[in-house]
Image: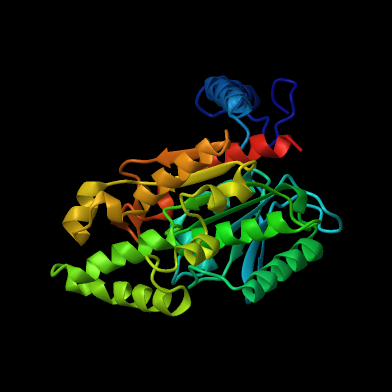
Length: 348
């Protein structure tokens, strides 16, 4: 024992100055703690700042549920994620027909309409039916049966049906619509119809393709004209001779008789009359274009009393398979079309 304090490993005199090691140890501990305090304070400040930063950050966006997709041999169906399949439900039903050589998948690739519509809560039926500018009664009946079956199977809202098509699909659209309007009690109630640069007036189509064959220019595009002429000659004949048959069988012509079934229906006719493009790339004049036919048909619809017939002329919107082309799905403003459907769906 030294100085009344037991000398242990920690309580012993330092040989140099006689100070107890215990005192020095305690002093060094206090000194070390004091040196740590600024670092701890900085760490605390950083932790508080981090907590405040994370608390102020907006919550991560909620991913919208994907629409349900049903693919069959005759159509593709896009359903809003929240649609009840056990009963007839949903905001509306939009039926789309492709152009002459396309399928349902091509419609979705070339047009933003399907995805914009289903995002807005509208079921979209993308039909595979193509390669028709005319339809027989049997074909129309089969088409109605296919669509009716889809409505029943998936609880689609057939009471708010809208039909549209591009090019030859526009012809199918108008023929199907007329057929439905003639039925006394169809499963589908058509609330609106639209065509996108479709060759509705078959008499004009005949004359236009006849002029195309007579021109010496653009031989690479004469094959289609030859097919059209041969087909119309075999089914309807020459419109100069069989004008009444053309009026009866064409999807729409600029005559009071042809447009009469659509007088009370909202109708939209979309076309992009880029006369420069058609002259440079096809050698065609305005009188050869679907735009010319649409202008005349719209005029007759309005004269017949249709106050909801719209001729929608676009500019520089047409893109077909990535290339500039005024004959395209893309001329339709998909958001404006969806709003049109929503407005008309509210008036039941």
